[in-house]
Picture (cartoon, rainbow, N blue to C red):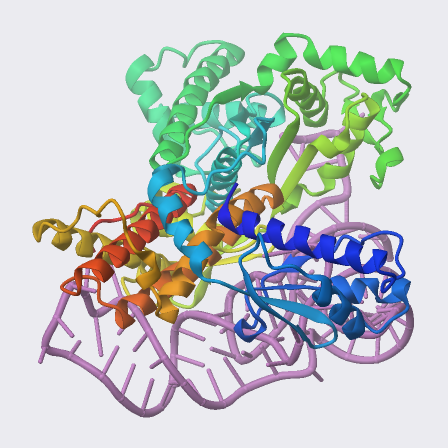
Length: 559
RNA sequence: GCGCCUGUAGCUCAGUUGGACAGAGCAACGGACUUCUAAUCCGUAGGUCGCAGGUUCGAAUCCUGCCAGGCGUGCCA
């Protein structure tokens, strides 16, 4: 259990005891205690913690909140808590001021836990799956995919740190219409490359990368497929290109720091009969009907605007049908929490997907879709227009070349998923104060520099007993307080699936360190104080590096 | 038309289950380097929380209506 939680629980217990005593004494007319909060006030003057208990009791006890607060504090016993003093303030808050000693135990905790500091077991080993990116293997990864990669991977890291059993998965759309278009595009490029004047399909993939794919195909097979049957030619091209595209995607994501546990093929759902099976199940439960020669799922029962086709009149299942089978497969594999990251342009798909799960007897609440809004790229103050259809877009590998992996990952995680992301290329690559990534990394580098010099001076080993009571400067205490919050920040961000809380916390922690750094010297001071500060600085280093690892950003030793 | 997301300081955005005078970074202005990295720190200034109602001890947060922007509304994925 982390220190903050421990301290909070002690105060809450003491509050409950106080309220019950007041009730027994007949001073409070209540039958039950509300779910009150003990929170950290925004204003430092309001103490270390504050509770709204008295205000929540006002109605039932038929007394003014401040009066109730008086009664509760009269019966409040400080023994067994860190509370030094308490006061009644504002409309009826009870504010608590704590003895700073509890903070010093945090430093020892961090030094003991090292790279495990921040981890918790709130997930209780529950099996959770995060599916993200899942870009069509017909082209290169664009900015939307990049944001998905950074967010998805960080969410998975967070869940892992919060004690879930996490699996990362990539769904390969290697079936359906887009593969057909892919085949036609490849064939056209192939024939063009061999000197034939054939038109390029309107709905095809116009990207230059396909020309290169076909060139390497020709290097391998020459004009062997020029005379071949069109179907045979397309099959050979698609097989080759899918493989090439997928290994490329896998490599780029790996370079971005993202590695998957499972790559799941859509085609396998067609081949295994899983789609047919799940359609039959829906049909027998009465959720399917036929209209205009096609089979429809009654998604309008689940808040969808209208019903959705699952099997086209030509007998071919739609993407939606495959997706239903895919999600059934996920639940069959025993995942208790299934998380998907989708672009906001797929939001229309959410209601029917959850509806299909409900129709099949699964709990739709166990399927959670995180929607991310679109990314806009800015350079020189101008927005870069992008179009996937014409193949004109900035790819993930280009972005990494341009701004580096650290800045890219940090920037994508910085904003909450449901806000539009304006990605400023100039800012991301600027090596200056404006760049938030460097601000955080710099704090880590500064600490490493201190520790290097401590080592050279032969003072890096902390004595067995360090007297942290010597840390009394406000900048020291605030810094420790922030370090103490880390486990809760991680657990909270994990459960809410909100990785952007990490970057926010990162800049706060780094900021407090930089203030401490200007206020307090660490080296060449009195030995006992130096030991205490070295301990603190090491604890901050551990916290920063654990934090940056979650975001997928490096913690440099020098800058 | 309908559905989802967004609207908070000049700009980019936080604001966790409703809590005390609404926060940060950048930009602007003024300061701080003979001592552990100035990619830093300290300070000043800046807001009718899109608009109008409602719910309550209390609303940026919940409800209703309206306005603006994005996305969706395919037998595409």
